[in-house]
Length: 268
Length: 343
Image (cartoon, rainbow over all chains, first blue to last red; front, side, top):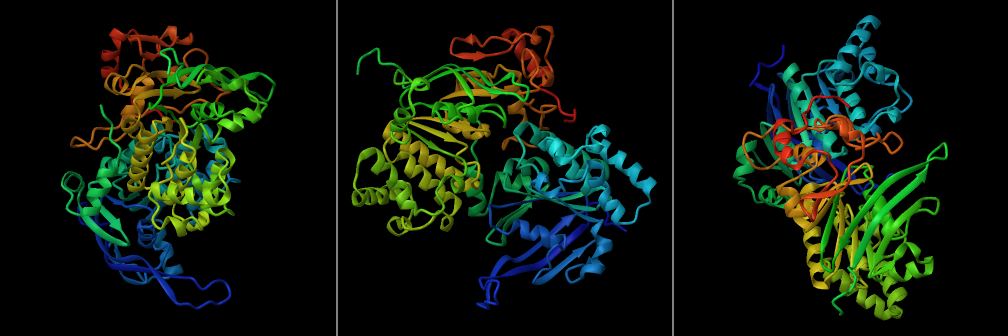
């Protein structure tokens, strides 16, 4: 059962992620720890988009990877759809993988250059044991959903434009009908006019499938466009969180204000 | 200075061509003209592949020899396209300097940053090693690098992206150039660092009275920095003029599309974005006539002919579009370029 709309689908409590740094390949044991995520508590409600903003190194991508359990948090709990997933290990995570998906910044770097579109989009389905006929049918649905011409199914990533590649990345993430999608700078590598296409597409898809998004970005304009709520991260901590309009119109935290002031404005 | 002094930079009908696979000439920049006066900031905006970086490299004489460049690039009246390599070397770094997008790949990774700033002073100003090193530290201080004396001894990888870009700017401004070319100077940086670097560029250009040609895909950056702007699409300048005029009354449907693609930070709820359908054509696949016509909601028969760059709303606000200026407001209202169509 999925959480009803408006109820928390994801709840983080005091999540910490530390990395060991220094040392080196030959057993250096300086024991230095870098705390990339430093006690984050957050809720994401079913059907909403939470924008996660901050500058490079603030820990937003690490937090995104913890949410998906691509990384194990050092401490704290992550509850997804009612279950504590913070300590699940490899095999026990597998059934969850379909519900938790990710869309990456650079689709060129995240798609296997030697596979055609149909194999790339179908891979998660085959891996999860879908029968061949169902894979075919789902593939066509997905191509339509993300606005890719069906004829492109046999194309390879290098034959596609940046926008088309990102559509493939989106289709692949949607293949298993996830509940929660973490989008890590999904439009940052795209040209302005293509960026708007993808932002609109992500909104349409969310509406059509009732998806929940965690939208990670340094671009506050895009976050404002897409999100209901926003969390501002700095130095591994959430410094401010609230409805997007409130945070943008009357930021309480000095760092949020600094971020907002730094954006170059159009003088129309 | 005499009243008839030529403008600092005058680019006239600049055309850049490469040879296609079958030997035909493919123009990647077509008939670009602009002037930049002392102290002025020209912003060139466009998407990847629009020809903006090629234009900038042509100004520096840095295009590979097999690329054909026609037209004129007059710097203080001298046509740079006719200069020899040694003559160009005297200008580059001294009178015309450049800041690229990615300081990590344009700084020498195995040379201390102080030496990289000092290098130009020794080459162009004939300073000895000690004097150049001292001046380099002053310059690093001036661009806001803390502990400049010790930082001068760092290698690029030891600095943050913002600090590296400051080093690039210090090197570019070391010989007090009259013209600074900046190609996406802040695109790789965080937004707070971007704001600092833009402020720094503006301040230093003001102090030196240097003119700036700033290339960016970010209309916000261009709007904040530039007094003149040129919008490029598929090798053409499709609209150019005073920045205030272009933003207040954009004439080309591509400019409308760009403006409609950007999420605004004002107004609630956010307006839906008007994405431009499709994608920019490659040089080889550029349609005849207006290169934008296949993505344009307002294209009609005339658009199969390439429009002239005409100043119909004002002599100094020109655009390449067949639509009648009187019809534009209504056209833009009716179809700001609609979303939906997939690439």
